[in-house]
Length: 261
Image (cartoon, rainbow, N blue to C red; front, side, top):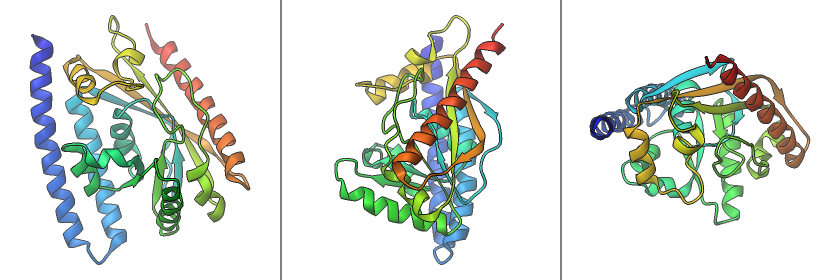
């Protein structure tokens, strides 16, 4: 019964809060229609507020390890769940690359289209070229861009090889790539985050979100690295970025384990 009550209250609160943030985004777009830099700054502030607010509604505590990068930047992290975006929006707001399907999701799609979200059609190879031109222009204009080079989610135990295609703008502009690592922690006596928070494989969004919103809560950790990586070609850059994220992820998991009673 407690889980059902949590689910209903969190669902209602999420819908109301997201509607308010959508209205805020429309207002920002209206007053900054001639100033894209001002729009980016205001939307980043709104994204951070939305990330923190939605995380609190979800019962998600945020723990930040290290210092987030300052724009302009490229940021790559591992990918575990849709809650990753709440975590990154709250701690390091930027332009985020998302799969095109998200734009069509009920409710969430409208909100992401209103914010700093770039949608990539992964089924169309030429769309990568279009996306790289957009990313390059955004970073050249002083913005930050973040994405998940694994191309899919995992259970949080390993880091998949990175796809190099979206790293081309970093090579072309000669801008170093920042690495980040994400991990989740569930309360004692609860199922591990790999079974509870991770959204992988054939998991359907609605049943997973219902389980997550019914649960007592969980902790989201993000570690930002102090060092950046660079390379002369995107494949080499992908390998170096993967090594950097893997190292941060291993350190983060050790810290979480060491802090447990």
